[in-house]
Length: 236
Image 1: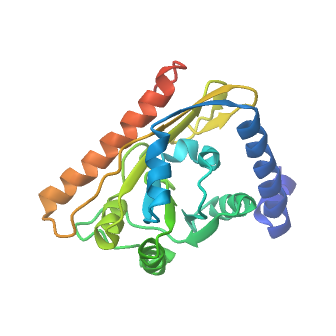
Image 2 (image 1 turned 180 degrees about the vertical axis):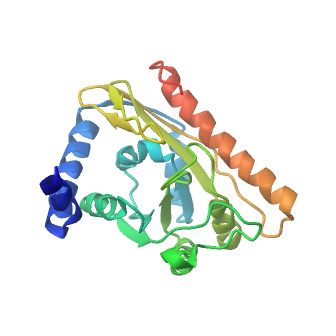
């Protein structure tokens, strides 16, 4: 037990597990028959060269690789907990990591400066203004599950970039007993990938309007999640 935990916490161990997890994600992606809904939303945004924020719930983040964007995806990865393993895994797909975290509340919606949030926010703003794509799990890294962090709204306000919610579900999967009911996709399955229409957030909003925008994006994320899982009877 102690040996396994020590290996997981070591740099060589995380590199090994990241490689194996990336290999497994590729296996699932290539052996799944995908049904894509509203995929034109993604291709249209990419063809216009406009930066946007791609979000999905934490329970299904490994499946984001299946979206296959033609641009490099810059992914915000927390410095907390399993963030290093996630970063090592996603790098195998050519993704670029932005390390940091944002607070899950507070009326000013400021980045968590103790976890590199301020630097991460500045980096993401520059990338979005340069037409890049930012990937986020807005209920991570610790939840509550399926509740959108206000930091996503701040990022959309300051950058002017639209938010696109996506949910990716496979019929064959296993759920963990974690806070987010993390979903492990299994290979040789059917899969659904559902995109929501882009949502833009005005730069100048009062507190009630900003909370209304947060709830609107959260509802869109939950709707695509339920739609993707509905065909497989996979509802929370």
